[in-house]
Length: 355
Image 1 (cartoon, rainbow, N blue to C red):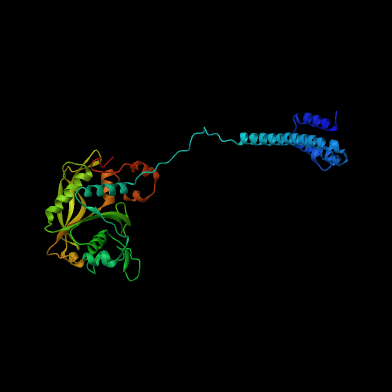
Image 2 (image 1 turned 135 degrees about the vertical axis):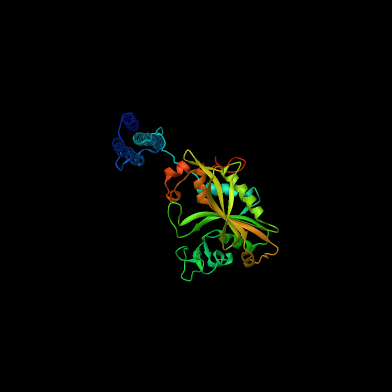
């Protein structure tokens, strides 16, 4: 048996055993190292007779390739086994129960704004918006508010500069001014949004939500105002009949002015809107003052109209039985989960408003 055959058979036998990585590397070094058996055989080629040299070199290369392939296979096999064992120890059990998923809810104030917008859109009103930071002219002067009016005092209004030119709007009426300045009559809009006043208790908050309505056209009168509000209140509270009364009042921007009360009664500890002999103030309204129309360059001899303002938070409290305004802003998920609404439940007069 030739030396090459002996080397091949000896190491093929060794490599078939259960070797570890260190032992295989030792075999690899003894074969292909600087003084390894295969390396030594390549050094002999120069001393072999010419007629045998070609066959010897060919046989040697075949044996070298065969042993190298087997050694590389064994090394890969061992490394793959080690990786698989490691992965088996570190594997994730995907059958574990998933973590609880907290689903958000629509805030009652947001839902109420959507409801109000839906109702007024049914009778031709469009929604307008404006900035929370207003100038003094749009918030007071253009609305016929006298310089000495209490609303202008710092204890009622959040001013943003010493000159009292910039402020946080105290109502959404400035949106009406901006709309009338930019456009020409007729106007039929509502303006929901955040408003700010220096006040805080169980029924008042420094930041609250208000919606104001404006309808300017030819031959508009108090009858239109009463009809509009009667329709809105019945739709909002989802009742067929509503007791409603207008009490004379005063607002700088309307003349005549009125506060609107609605009838209610208490039954089983709950407020029932539309029935009973008790009265609840719900909004302020009136016919737009001629001075307001002049300030926006609308001729009061040609155009008249009405305006109204409603506290959105107060409406939400009445509709959903919430007794503390401050809860709206506490960011308590338990409260929101109880009073909130499904994100996909968009209120309309056709689908229902209280779903």
